[in-house]
Figure 1: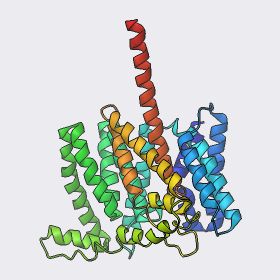
Figure 2: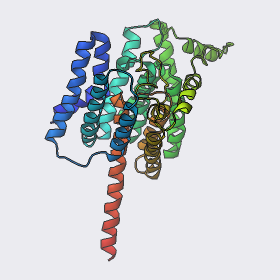
Figure 3: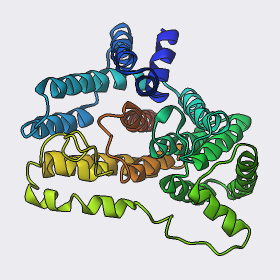
Figure 4: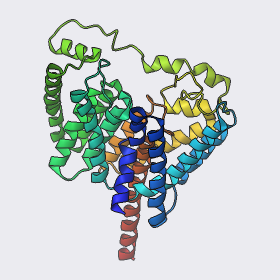
Amino acid sequence: MKILKYITLSLIVLNIPSVSLVAYGGGVGSLLSYSTILALTLFYFFEKKTSPNWFLLIISILFFMIGGLQYVGFTTQFFMDTIKYFIYLICGYGLVKHINTAEYNFFLVIGALTIALEAVLFTSDFGRYSGFYIKPNEAGFVCITGYATTYGLKNAGAKLTGQFICTLAGLLTFSRTFIVIWLLLNVISLKISIKNIRIFGLGFLIISTLFFIDEVVGLNNPRFEQLKGIVNNEEVSSEELSEDSREDTWARFYDKIFDSPIIGNGYGSFSGKEGHGLGVHNSYLMVLGEAGILPFILFLIYIGYLLTMSIIYFNKKPNLVMQIIALSLFLMANHNFFTFYYVSFAAMWIQYQLYLCKTEDDKNELVMAIENS
């Protein structure tokens, strides 16, 4: 079962079906997509059955049911998306119960390495790199999740290595979201130990590595040119850095939200599935815009619950606070919570780790009550 577990985890975390779709076409991509669902189903079938993730199930049922009422695309595609997601949601929650922190971090770091390898071996005129994750912002999410997860590792060498790789790869995505979250997480890390201030020193080493890569292969990125200008004390323009801001993208969808705030505008209307390819790039607005106020409120409660509980267990599992902060902020720049499996997998993994913390506390309280009786 370990082999099946790791195969399934790699298909999800390394985004293999999607990268195969881009590299080899729809046939191979579809085959691997269905293989992922099959592998999850087999793993779930052979493992001991436990309680499902009722919180996400209810949110997802409402999202797909209400959003589907006004869906204007092909009905077959909607049903396939829905069925695949619910199989994934049920079986995927069974998988996260068997993935420890070290295993999860290992696959995240492997995913981050694909970004660095792309930058070195397949230099792009676009100047931003994403490895197996197709788009730089999504790649940045994997890097920041991998970085946050290192704070749950016991092995100091693995922790430092993971932090270096995830930070370097994250910077190679040139994602503003990654940089903002990375800085925030490092400030939080000082609460764990003031010794974590050394990571800022590691940052200088990583930036030096970026300069080396640029000298060897040429990164060809406007944002990196801005960074070089700052380092060299040259006059720089902020115009390129502010292009295509998320606030401008969100503003294009506000009118549609106000037109139908109760039941939304239909599945796919905010995530580029209606044919124009433009999405809102915000999962919270996507849920509100496609399925209305009820799934939106429940989704906020779900994320808020994970954040609150992770704060409660900060001293025991500090990585969980960092991971949910990374996830909740990333969702403000991405609308694929229900379609990119590695995103919702991150949420489910955090949720189950918090469940384990709570269960352990409950057992300890019960033991103390028995001893004091």
